[in-house]
Length: 70
Image 1 (cartoon, rainbow, N blue to C red):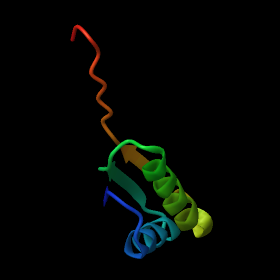
Image 2 (image 1 turned 30 degrees about the vertical axis):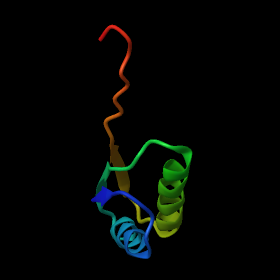
Image 3 (image 1 turned 180 degrees about the vertical axis):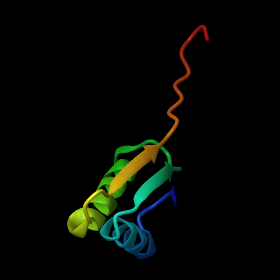
C-alpha cells in the first residue's frame, strides 16, 4: 500500500486487511513533517482497533539527509 495522506479509503483498506490477519507493507510517500506522521499514526491507530491475530504492519520509508561534505 502506498500511503501519502489520510483518507477514509486508506483507513478502510487498512482496517479490512488488519481485521483479516494480513501483513500490510506501507510505502510512506509524503514530506517529513509532524503533521504527515501524525496522520499516518492516526490512520494506523484507527485501523488497528479491530486487528486480527497475527496482523502486522511493515512501514517502508527512506529518509535521506544531506550532510555537508557528502
